[in-house]
Length: 146
Image (cartoon, rainbow, N blue to C red):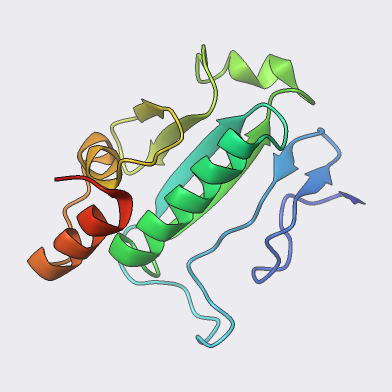
């Protein structure tokens, strides 16, 4: 699907491509059951660099979405960039491996390489504090971290 804008339906999680050729997989914090209002406070701008629709890329996106829903609910935006389609985009964030997650906002910029399966390491790497101790324990059990 080619579109002129970088925006797509906030409930659509299918990849779309804008005229620059970037692949976007919209995963806004809004769910179908929530009102369409902007979250209060800071919004986390996350960019996930992948190389095609490989199992590792899909796993990284799924893991990231679970972590964001549990710890950043209502405060995040994920942009997925496929470097097979646009390898030149790797230069901007100095990407040397995929999948790589880049936290653009809030500053400072942070990067995590891998499929993001270790939720605790992702939270530490992004400098996200778990919502509560019980949520942190459930996240650890979910992804097998101590």
